[in-house]
Image (cartoon, rainbow, N blue to C red; front, side, top):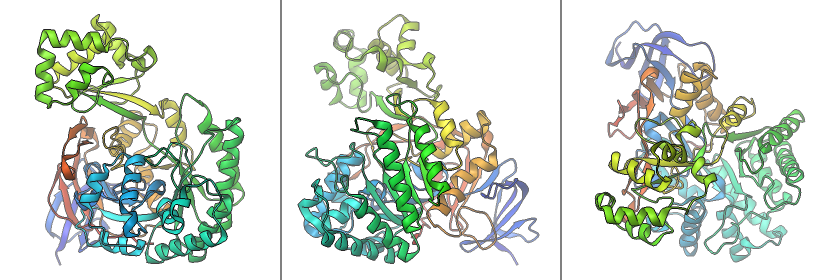
Amino acid sequence: MAHDLLIRNGLIIDGTGAQGTAGDLAVDGDRITEVGVVEDGARREIDAEGCLVTPGFVDIHTHLDAQLAWDPIGSSSCWHGVTSVVLGNCGVTFAPCKEADREQLAKMMESVEDIPADSIMSGLAWDWTSYGEYLEAVGRWPKGVNVGGMVGHCAVRVHAMGERSLSEEPATAADIDAMCALVDEAIGAGALGFSTSRTLLHRVPDGRPVPGTWATGDELTAIAAVMGRRGRGVFEAAARLGEGATDAYAAIRTEVEMMAEISVASGRPLTFGLAHTFLLDDLYRRVLEHVDQGNAHGANVRPQTTARGIGILFGLSHRTPFDSAASWKRLGKLSLLEKLAVLRDPTSRKQLIEDGVGLQGDAFLGSTYVLDDDSLDYAHDPENSIAAVAARRGVSAVEAFIELSLETEGRVLLNYPFLNQRLDAVEEMLSDPNVVMGLADAGAHVGQIMDASQPTYMLVNWVRDQGVFSIEEGVRRLTSDTAELFGITDRGVLRPGGFADINVIDLDALALKLPEYVYDFPGGAGRYVQGSSGYRATLVNGRVSLENGRHTGDLAGTMLRS
């Protein structure tokens, strides 16, 4: 009998880390039915000669909670082999939600994750109050990717405590009982876990830390115990790693030990974000040491990090490093074509140069790197800094930026990595067996960063170009490792009976495209997007969703429930 679809002659990388094997893969309905040598034909065949055949990638750290309502394909994630995403990270979610709290949660999401509240308010139907009802609503949305979500501490605390949720006073026993009931409803309805934010960087619009920042260990342990009783769910945190402490290293140890204790007491896995920064150059190493100690005593703690520096993007199309000057502020109100016309005018250009010189210090200019179509490696190479480019041209940094903008018709970008600032530190973290791939933040910080392309960078840089990881290990880190942590079953591995989420990848041709700033959010709000080349095909639940980087319009995504 003919199969529905057959992928022939590829190098099958099954996602487990096992050695790749040449062969075929058959799909019937939404499942893989044969792997190896397939004798039968199919109604449709994809020739994978010279390509890798991998599971679809599972991105566990996104903020697509609202975006999927108006962007069903899940861009930019879908252009980088991602077939399953987890929403609800960092404690900020839109459920549970009383009607009177909708705008507060939308503005909180904007304040924490730089997703425009106006777009959120107009783009969502808000036809839910409980978290289970939110999952049902997402289930009704057309989706090009599979979607699961965690219930967020911010929404839970606001629902249970109202304005007191922002207080530094501990929650009462009644408050904790109310929060546990909300979390129990969410996990029972299929939430993949619970998320919280403890970092002092996450704030509501009036500047106060978000609800849950000051939660005691008792509160967090009680909530984690809900998942323990259910026997499912992961605890995710934006941890407070030394912030605001007199002794940062002692505070780090206390924080990690608390998270390990929560994991041991609940029996559930716990994950939190980890990145390198020059401010505490060996922080990440201290954290990993404490994690190792906790896991040796029965915890299951998995820090997550990115495959490259987390960088703020600057460019003529959106914001530049010189916008504090009046002439640059005026420029920012124009269209891209109008901006280029102003830059070409000698008088205007002279004024912009004069106003921009000295606005940024040597440290910033020396660690802000040029991204263009010819240089898109995110390598943190000092020779590619805007300061170095300016020196080679014999001009100031602001004049170099103007020249590059004119030469590229406004496409050039500057990238300032403010986290994961040393790539050797990134390599060290990625090589730690406790570390999991995460923090790509797809859908978040839409006017600042674009890291949803992380899977492509992982394969291009760390696997193909640097050879730090084998193909098999690189793919495992993007598939079964993330899926297993979040209890996502029958995905992340190519085997008969598993769901047919599949990538066909020409590794030699795999490449990132330059990020672009587009205006496609509700109300005309803008965001950065980033494409790729080298993905010959991506399947979601057995149906071809992308071919050669173009979406087919087939929306086969489904809900992922615990």
